[in-house]
Length: 276
Image 1 (cartoon, one colour):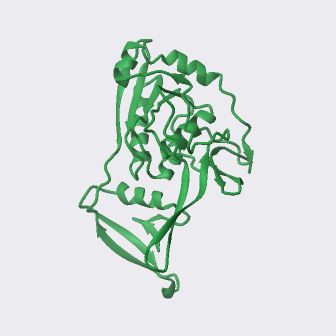
Image 2 (tube, rainbow, N blue to C red):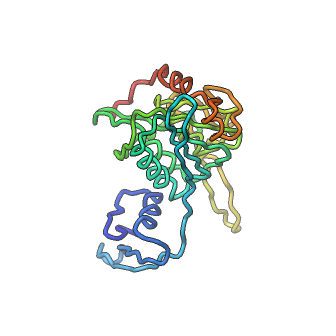
Image 3 (cartoon, rainbow, N blue to C red):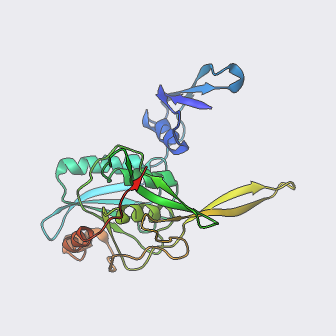
């Protein structure tokens, strides 16, 4: 198993974090050092050097847009959740904070999802830390018996816990897009806008091999938002229903009313944090 990448410990890290670290240290063609442990070697690590040959594209594009109300708006469009998505959002937010933006607009239209850890890590960039005895719920996992298990905020890499966020969804915003939007809205960090509700895909499925070489996919659980809104088969309804069209034009013209989205966010009532 991999215990470190370029000297950074991977103990207790997710596969998503490992993939992100593999990309973080250098450009295509550079060398990365993996520390591997084989159980038969009594936990003695061996070092293996590999050359980076595969590049995961940054799915985030961003720009700063002047809004009709005089605000500077940090607009981010994300097309999928992959191993580069959290880094792409983080880099955009850092640049926007330096520029002094007043609002963020995160456009997830057409984003069918991808790596769930990406959604959770992006949500963590915008959520304030709680005292050690309290937990911020990002999503619940509900098994087939109806039992709910919370997935709590773990990251402490908070970049901006205050600047208002508007999330744009459509009927093709699915899976990780819905988890991220639900996590931020239910924790009173974002307002959702769009002309229709989101796709409604919130299943956890497992693939199990059969003796004849075939396999079967079984649904083992589903995701629900921190305020217990069922995602699968239903989707998320926008707080403000509007057909925006081109988001940048909507920001500039005032069609996307950011004063209104901020007011909706301020009226949000957050559920009490869970006790850990």
